[in-house]
Amino acid sequence: MDSKEFRIRGKEMIDLVADYLENIENRQVLPSVKPGYLKDLIPSEAPAHPDKWEDLVSDIERVIMPGVTHWHSPHFHAYFPTANSYPAICADILSDAIACIGFSWIATPACTELEVVMMDWLARLLNMPEFYLASSGGLGGGVIQGTASESVLVTLLSARNKAIHEAKLEHPEWSDYLIRSKLVAYCSDQSHSSFERATLLAPVKCRKLPCDKKYSLRGETLLNAIENDKKEGLIPFFVCATLGTTSVCSYDNLEELGPICHENNIWLHIDAAYAGSAFICPEFRPYLNGVEFSDSFNFNPHKWLLVNFDCSALWIKNRSFIVDSFNVDPIYLKHEHQNVAPDFRHWQIPLGRRFRSLKLWFVMRIYGATGLQDYIRKHVDLAKYFESLVNKDDRFEIVGEVTLGLVCFRLKQSNELNENLLKIITQDAKIYMVPSKINDIYFLRFAICASSTEKRHVEFAWENILKHTDILLKNNQ
Ligand SMILES: *Cc1c(COP(=O)(O)O)cnc(C)c1O
Image (tube, rainbow, N blue to C red; front, side, top):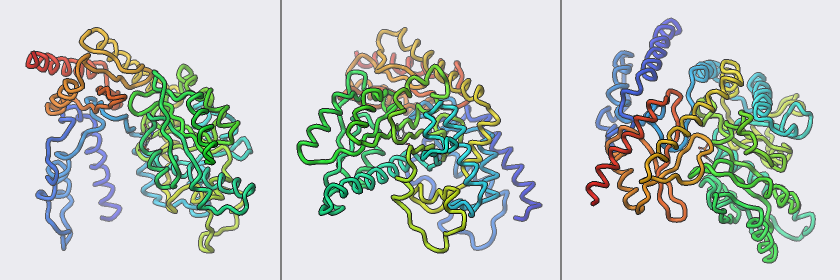
């Protein structure tokens, strides 16, 4: 394909994308294919000779679409949202054209420099502490990672190296391995699985601490755990606090955890992967109170801030801990400006990196702060509306508190009945939700996900749930 043909095919592709998204509501949100469906639809070998473009395009509907879960259908209410917007798609097209690998400043100065400024823009939108901003002239700064999982892993590894270094100052005779075997990281029992996984990779001990009745990790619980571990000769070094847990969107108590971490020289990381986007609204910013105690903060604009996957924003209070932890500097990657501009390869696990800041630049400029705030507020209002529908029916109860775009609810019946309800809703595939379970209580999660979700889709979902509930309860009598 040459540029002349690309001008034609590319524009056709844009039309295909716009048609897909405009009409997505008419597609079944959850596919009904069985595992292995695809291999029977295409040849088992790559073509020996070029295929026709038209044949390829017609195969999209035949081969791909039957196996797509439509995350951007307004009937998609599972997991948490993943963002999608036209400005972000346009930015990705440009990123694909430049197609650089921005591992160092010289490898594409704009890629590094736009990222530095965008992370400051974003930090200001969230009203983050000044020490996280590169423009403050301090030691802090932001970087775009691929996912929250990578963000917490690089943070944990940095904190681990800092803790080993500090323990050696006191005990020069201890080996790295001995010190590592004493390190303990903490999270709550509601923390995302990616943190436990990071502790397995690090590898360091992980203590999952119990939450209070509001699914929040409290200071006293942490303090007791730290004291017990210290008595055993262990070294507490890391706490992963969550703002907006995956199960019920609850919040750990930063204002209690923060001072305890500070007094015990423990790195406090905040995982706000989903909820972080909402903190751009002044009315939701109080959830972030206590952030001034943190050493690192992460949220995913690719979840709820209209920036397509992948874009996970990570800020570090003292970047030297992350840069020094992973610094290898072979001669072919060296350049003369190494000390004045960040080389983001030191801030992450892979060497290569995409020009992801373009997506942030396009989205923040085209929506503006007010456009982004309106978007968040609309989703929260829709969730509150769904909550009001649930509350009107006394066969149901709300689980946890509806603070943002997630509503957790259940029939006031056995787990088994609730499981059956979700099973028949999922088989019917008009809407898609996933369940969760806390303290052996099974419940359904209804998340506002797609940017096209309106009040009528929320009503459609509730009517669908009621229809299946009536049938289920009748058969159960
Ligand atoms: C979604 C989520 C994650 C994982 O995000 P990835 O970017 O897919 O790694 C981690 N923590 C919380 C609280 C989440 O909601």
